[in-house]
Length: 289
Length: 245
Image (cartoon, rainbow over all chains, first blue to last red):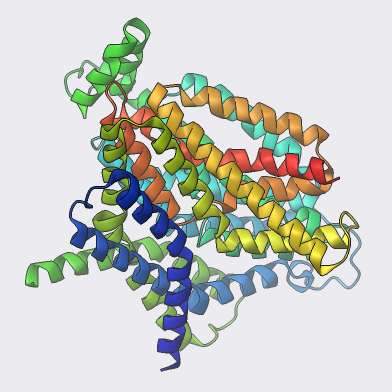
């Protein structure tokens, strides 16, 4: 019974959150487009499913994962766990926190796999690319990126380096990769940086950052506790472009082995055409879909 | 009916697979590293069941409702041919979904109390409220502008990399001149703007527009709206910090 009441409260809050979006859509549909929504019944049910799904999801996270994950983040960063046996804390060594980095990477990877907005973008990407980009491969690449990002971000908090150095060097890597990776993946890679930091990842990662920053002497939770989210949205961009580059390299290899007809490297071809006739390239791509 | 049930069960199984990594990670750290028993196991099992069920429903509704409405609206706007209405819609969508975003409200409130204790604004409730609201409207405006620029980019076919890389350069330059207390908040504000309902809707809008406009490729032109929406808040929050101090 108590669970039901909690569920209804969560549902009510979700509906309130969605109300602005819903009113904008309906307003423009009725006043500007002035046409009935196609398949209105199906779309309506879809919205209801999304609302129910989101409410159940959030309630489940609050009940099971968040308390446990946050507790673990505090326990793993607690001085009693890190410096077991040492009576007097003399100095901090970065390798004392090895379990924290492993936890950061593992929790970053696993929460990203369950992130609903990433699932949405991945489904769309597979559909639009005609299966050339696999939804699951994209999600795993993004998750690896988040794992590396959060582990590195935790390391930064432990050693106390300024955040700018890391973020700006990350940007430099993104710029270099943008010039060398297949052009089709670039917008998707940029997008995947924004979708990773959402419902599941943010609360757990914030708890980890806050736990680290408040237990290490000399770190301030207000200054050092922030910033893990920035890491989590930068590294997936690098990871997704790296995934595309690896796939391209593999396709090249297959092509070189004389199996040209088996697999066509869409990316390379569209790039070549882009240079010659910019207008025809999109037609060509559409046919390829 | 029976067939539908099988489809549902398959989707349920898929959600279980999505959740498996989290369960494994938490179990491993709890038993092997921290060496502690699971606290209130009943609650956790119920919670996990809810998460699996919720994810299944969400993905179901995504393909039934959110994707189709985003795409059909994009197509209707493209057919109507009025760029100014499309851009108005883009701004409203970006601004409206962000200004009420719960995580943004939470972050703005927290940032206000940090600013008050740091002596940047007066330590009164009214000053904190106006600071938090200012931050919220700044971020919402930035997201609205990002969607407008992104939609304009799709219509015109500008390559995304110049916009994003130019934005990065701006972020780096602003980092050097913006007051240091705003930087952490600014960097994180890019991440909190993209909610679970906005992302599928905006993605469907972009892809729908790129497929409806002749000469655009949904893959290279359709994506990128979310990237812009997480870039502009960083720039505008830093501007806000400079204006305030």
